[in-house]
Length: 85
Image 1 (spheres, rainbow, N blue to C red):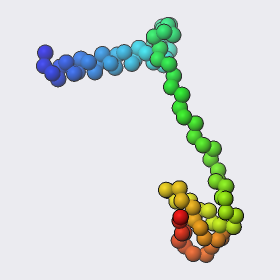
Image 2 (image 1 turned 135 degrees about the horizontal axis):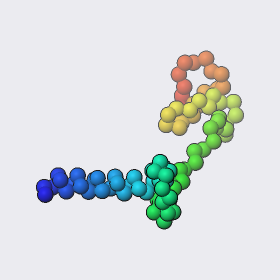
Image 3 (image 1 turned 135 degrees about the vertical axis):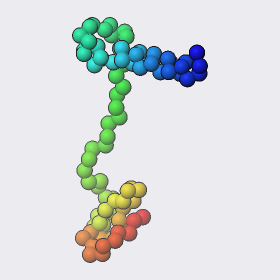
Image 4 (image 1 turned 180 degrees about the horizontal axis):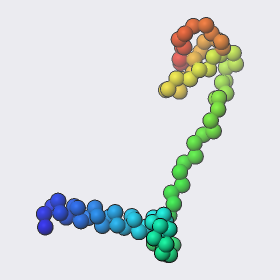
């Protein structure tokens, strides 16, 4: 058996094990898989609540760039560009 054949066999064995271990696969098959064979669910991290970020400095624009910096110009400024700090 060549190296590539061995890698292919290992990959197929891993896919078969994952297919057995997923709750969806068990539901599709209709067979009851013991809970001991199922992998535990991984909790996804919670995203922070969406909404405006309160600015510590009142009266400033507060527009935020991709890096998280806030605009320091007055609120409602007419300039097209923001000044981030």
